[in-house]
Amino acid sequence: MASQMPPPPPPQWVRDLTSPPPSKAKSGAFPDPPGYTSSNPQQVARSKSSKNAVSQPREPPSTYEMDTLKLKKAWELALAPAKQLPMNAIGMYMTGNSLQIFSIMMVFMLFKGPIQAVLNIQGTFARLETEGNKQNMLMVKAAFVGCNCLALALGIWKVNGMGLLPTTRSDWLAWETAREPLERAYFVPS
Image (cartoon, rainbow, N blue to C red):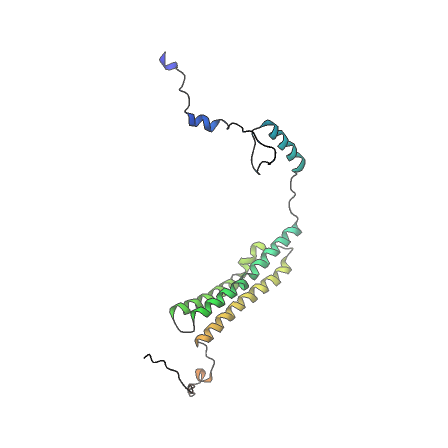
């Protein structure tokens, strides 16, 4: 009956994983970190009694509190385009006024972002709008559109600086001649 032999003992690593580590002597000066479960019976009993005394179920927020939180988040979303204006202005300044592919692509992206954001305004604020804060969301959406209009104004300023906006009479009338500059400056390397 050799087939009735007991199974071999598990390897040491299996025994280490299944048995808890031996408890070390702990000084009472430092409390356990959050989330740590002690294997010491005295500490377990003390932590359970303190948990029962302090821990109470948290009540869910009221609809007024949720509307207030959603309105705060909506204002953060509405003012986000205004926070990008300084970065965009520095980028437009750094690209220069010449017609190059880099400056043209920067201006294109400066126009594309606000136009897409204004067209998708309902989708942006849909998850934050409730019946309780519907009136307040109108002001938030107006601020969002205003901030995006500032970004568009920055793009128009850049296009004007590049000389692409028709702002003189000669741009519109065929019989007008373009203005001649009074003098020109040339750089001749020596």
